[in-house]
Amino acid sequence: MTEQHLPSYERDFNRDVQQLRDIAAKFERAARHCFNSKVQRLRDIVERFEWVRLYSIRRRRTAWIERFTKIQRDKREWINCAEIAEWCSEESGIMPNEVAREAAYKKILVDSFEEFFEENGRSQLRLLHPYTAKTRMTREWLTHLVQVYDDQTIINQFLAHCWMPRRFLERWLANHRMQPRPERFEPKCPTPPTTTPQSLSQARKAEPVIAEAVGHGASDADRERRFGPEPGTLRRYEAADRALFPEVERIMAEKQMSRTAAALDLALADRVAGVGTPHSRAKRLAALHKRDRGGTGQARGEEVQITPARELT
Image 1 (spheres, rainbow, N blue to C red):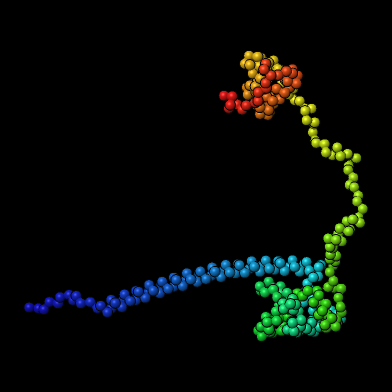
Image 2 (spheres, one colour):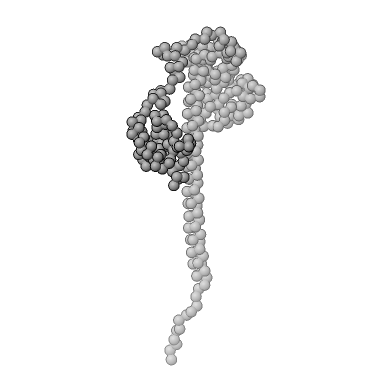
């Protein structure tokens, strides 16, 4: 009898466990990659929004600096350090002298370290640069710039964008024995003198009082007169109202009503001409009837008031 080989039910559990581990590792790598991609995308969006925010801030700051520069070309309340260095380079000859320009920047730099441009413990050198939020060139910040950048970078990127008040420019020129009050830095439009309330009142008293002429020789009565016809002179519906007099008198006699009530009865029936309310048309008709015919509305001599239509019903 031959031996029969039965199928084996033994399984390699180590191999199955390794396959499951490989599958789990693949899922973990995929999840990590998906998470990293989403994080990177979020970072890109944040950086883009940050760039847009900085760009809008720099654009507004640049526009403000341009307006400030344009105003100071006429007022000359603040003087740019780059313009001062340019003036110093032009003073030595016809052609600009770069050595004199650099020397002027060096003098401004040295005077900044010596607190020459400070007043009441605050630096008066105003920094206007579109890429920085700082507005004052302080000695501490200038010391940090000297430690980080070279002289040309400090001159071109920082000192060239600084502004000083005109009174500090005059002190700086006198300190270095230069020409006092150059014509280039004088204001183009002179500022008006300050006036006190007392001087202003004295000037008003000294000025002669000249009456304003009225055109066409019009008098005060002519100027105060209202436009249009005089009240009561324009009677558009007088003929139509007189035609209703017999009807008013018939209603007064038959219904024992007053003149005003009879006129209101006709106005509510839309028989009185005009564009006003029924009460205003009735009032106009009753006034004209009383002025023309005279007398009272009722035998007992009483004139009733006009009542609204809802009360008559």
